[in-house]
Amino acid sequence: MKRLVIGNWKMNPATATLAQKLVKGITEALKKDSRLSAIIAPPFPFLSVVGKLHPRLSLAAQSLSHKKEGPYTGEVSATMLRSLGVSCVIVGHSERRALGETDEMINLKVLLALKEKISPIICVGEKERDTHGKYFSIVEEQLTRALLGVSKVQLAHVVIAYEPVWAISKGDGKGETATPEHAHEMKLFIQKVLVSLYGRQVAMKVPVIYGGSVNPQNVEELAEKSEADGFLVGGASVNVDSFITILKAAHHE
Ligand code: PGA
Image (tube, rainbow, N blue to C red; front, top):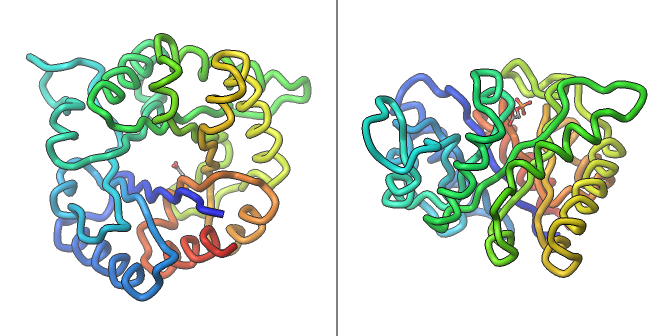
C-alpha cells in the first residue's frame, strides 16, 4: 500500500544548517531504498533550504495566510508557497487553532491553496474523548466547515488528517497514541461524511491519514491495523533514524 508520510517539523530545528543536515539524512535514505517517499513540512524560513532535493521528496508548508495578498505583516500567501515549489500545505492544525485560527479562516486557506494547485492537508480532531461520542460531531463540523465551497473536482486534491488533540505529543513524538481501532473508526466516519457531501465515487478516493504521536514503536501496528492512508508525523520526524523507520514501516507492504 502506498501511504503518504508527512514530516511536520513544527518549530524545529533551530538553524538552517541543522535543517540542511536533517534533509540530507532523509535524502540519503531515499536514495538507498526506492520504495520510500516523503513529504516534508519545514518552518517557512527553511522551505528553500529543504527544497526539492530528490524526486521522491515533496515540499509542504505548515500553514498559509487566509488572505490572498496585501498589507498583512508576517503572513505568507498561497501564491508565494507555490512559487517555491510547495505542493501541499497543512491547514487547521490544532496548534494553529489554539492560536486563534477559526473554521472560517481554515476554509479560506483551503480555497486559496486549491486555487494555487496546492493540496491542503486538512487537520481535524477532537480535544478529548467523551463517552457519548460527541467527538464524532466535532470532527464532522470541522470537516464540513473546512470544505465549504470546495468542488468535487477540487476534492481530488484534498487530504484529511485525523489528529486527535489528546494524542499529539509535547514534541518528542511520545504522547498517548490513539489505538489503531480509534484511527480506523474515525477514518470510516470521515469517509461517511465525505460521501454524504460529495458522493461515493469522489469521496472514497480522498486519503485519510492519522497523526498523533506516531513513532518507530507504534508505526507498524498502526500501519497494519488502522487502514490509515498515511501518517502526519511531528516529533519523530525531526530525527533521521526515527523518521526513516516510520517511512519504512509505512511503505512496507
Ligand atoms: P506528534 O505531532 O507526532 O509530535 O504527536 C503530530 C502533529 O502535530 O502533526
